[in-house]
Image (cartoon, rainbow, N blue to C red; front, side, top):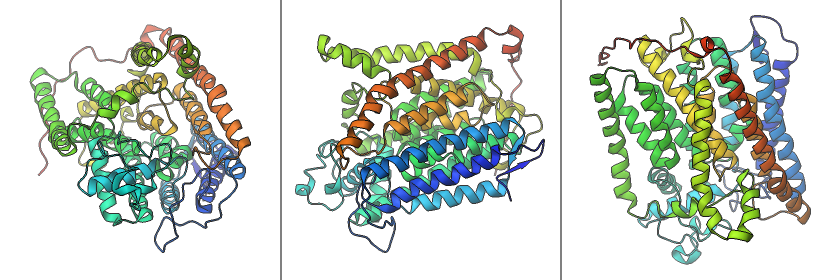
Length: 529
């Protein structure tokens, strides 16, 4: 059995290279995690019979950094060669997709998280919330005198940082902390199980949305389910963004037929990470062509669903839930194009520069969305394929109008996520997850390699991942790349996207319009028993 079942023409090499790079990438990140406490892997205390398991080898920071660099480059090659094989006619074997995805997720899910110490913060906030205290108010480093086995393990420099996460994420953190019963290792493992389930759930929704079209299914698998960069950041890294992505994509999948659950899922996405509120615009765009009475009913039910989640969550988390957002809005990460500008202007104008960068970035995001809109809002999606039983396996066949609603929402989600991700002043590798799910639903675009390049640069910029445990040489090399190289590479990606969008927009008018001139007649779908 080969990685790709080539049905159109035999493509020597590309599919096999993609499969080999996938195995190498997953094997290397798994090996680094299995080695235990290092510059990439925060220690979880004494070994136990239950996961996460590690060998306690304490590898050198230089070796860890080298292995992760090779792993992430191999992960990028997996996606690149996979797209190449797809372009030339290759189709992924569905059985192998399931085996490879489950195998990779299970393997990574029983190893200690790597790439950051965020999961220790998740555990600390969940532990505090599960005990009845407020993680948005309590200093985790001083809770119970700093001696709690879970909250006390929070890593520098976050020991005294209160929670910045939404109430839905905090509730999930509290749930896994309660299951962990005071064990740091067990708490972390339950969180990894949740992250892994959300990742696989997102892959499942993508696969069902594109129906039986083999090309679209292969593309969704290459870009999401078998993407080693995402597997490393979201499953092995255990980052909370994967929960928000799952909720947001599920909302898109249900918006055409089940507005109340779709609203609840959107509310859960916003309650997980507030920036996913941007996806509400995508849902509105998808529904925009419905007749006014139908549209009003859908919007009312959707809003009700969102409030049914957000209001109780807010009442539970309290009035200080978003206190940290103001401070976070002034942060500028090292690997974004904004950082060189801030570093140059800070000594001259002081802290006012960081206050201005946020609104300026938002304006740039709006401008980029306008530039991209003409191209991305008409781009074909896997839901548009003729004869594809889109959504059929999600619970009954969908009408043409319902398929169009979901396709429009997916296109708008890609547009909004691209504009936000490419212009935000604060970006980390796992933040890009919000764009890869809608990207997996559309046809091949010039964005594919641009966004792959960006994700690769960000992943490399944050190797090995921790602020402690590095040798002087490793710290100097990694910081120099993060601060002096990555911002310019990400700026080049942004410029390339703008050039692509402008070039495409300059094409013949007839190739850009695929919008019906008449509003389709819509009837309310019958309710399933």
